[in-house]
Length: 376
Image 1 (tube, helix red, strand yellow):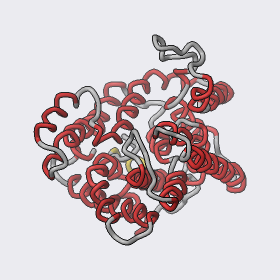
Image 2 (image 1 turned 30 degrees about the vertical axis):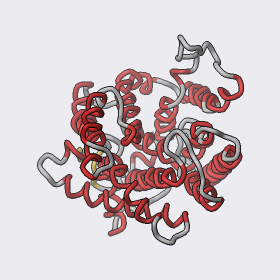
Image 3 (image 1 turned 90 degrees about the vertical axis):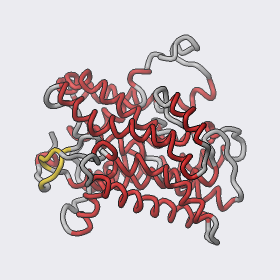
């Protein structure tokens, strides 16, 4: 374990979801900053999507819209990986029994997730977004997958998958050597290019319609980000100079590729899937940006004072903020887009307003006797 993890940074709560918690041990303050920042970044991404995308098709009203989305959303691409890495940083290897591990996450993660699956399927009918018959139809399929209105909940499905494999990979993480871990991280990094490789060569490494699990499937995607968080925690204890020398180039190179690919594809792509290919959380540009951003945020040493107090509270509420933000964001965007403001201003104020309102609502709900079953 690095020296950083041996240092007491103040009394705090231990990570459960990676976004909120309640079990008191010691707090690593920069993880609060990371969760608060990643939560805002996610909302910023979704505010950008309101400008051009409906999940399957896209269009830009003008070049200002394109550049605003490209420059802002491109910079926010580490959002999802950072959330996952924050969740994994103190999670693995597991401590305690498997039953205790799952019991805590069932209460704090799975139950609120189920509540919001139902709310996204039903509640928009209350303000006329669709009729109640549509809500009834949505309820018939809510147990299968998320409703398109709550498409951001895909992340929770993925997070639950991480929890399922945690008891399996924890013994390995306790015994794996540094070189062995680096070997698997190297394989994982190569798989981050598969998003683009598929577009040029099609199926690879045994992949076909009857086998969606090719050779490197089990060491790709989520696995690598979880492993990367563990590796950083265990082995990366660099000086400020070395951290900056590694992190800044990772951010710059990743950002340049994200922006460049998006700009090129905005003129030739016909699907959002292709337009955003370089923006996928497990694609190589967001992956190296996430590594750089994680290292930079880890340098934050502000662990007291009023500002940190707010950040700490946001961190504790971040799961609830994430769950509910898409219930409010479209309406907030519509309100601001009707004003005479530049597109980039609409994006920024939409994200900030949604962030603050959701924080306030989550804080109130969390104080209720049953609040933990709604916002974690």
